[in-house]
Image (spheres, rainbow, N blue to C red):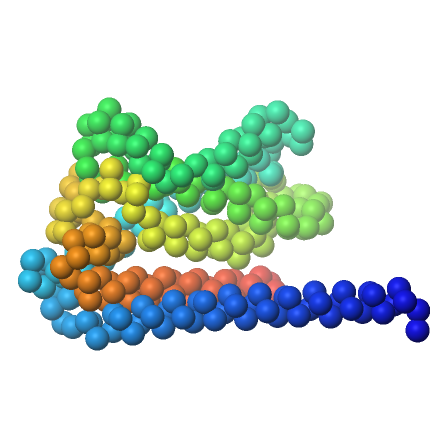
Length: 282
């Protein structure tokens, strides 16, 4: 047999083995982390941990859970429309080769790499101090919306680019206007990719702590409005672990946080499959 063929087969076998090894290590690490958190936190899951009111005795996570839901909803309400419509302009309306488009894309990529603590300092200076919102739910949500805006915009842009031009050309040939083509052809076809970007954004919001310390605050009570302080689950977990007095409850909070993230991902994946089936049926 030719020596070059033997070398090629040896390389293929080596690369395949390395691929399986890396996949096994990654999966093993994930199973270990999840199992460790569950083993440490499940024994401390008790009804008092879900009491409506936080006290130093029960260290309830329910106010933090409610604040997390409010923060996610408000951040997505601000960032998703801005990101989607910005991507629509870049893909469907802006001329190709436009310098403005290149500038916007470079800015979005730059914003994606900025550390979250920098976003927190900006949000503290601009929203909390300059606008006078203080440590509030609105200041934290606006800061997080700026953080996830590049992610939503880029994923939407790539999803719209993946829609075949033949879809648009066929609609134009039937006499449809550009606005109708965008909202009846392009966006429904790109909806699974857009939803994936929203899922990633939710994961970043739920796990964020540094930016929210300077904007949302760390008050362990239920928020009373847009301009009241509170804490999310990640901040609640950070506070309990840093105090060192309720380590078991901190692990229990991690279990709830993990279950929430898994539940959101499962629900979003089911929605994406439903959208794909509807798109194929249509």
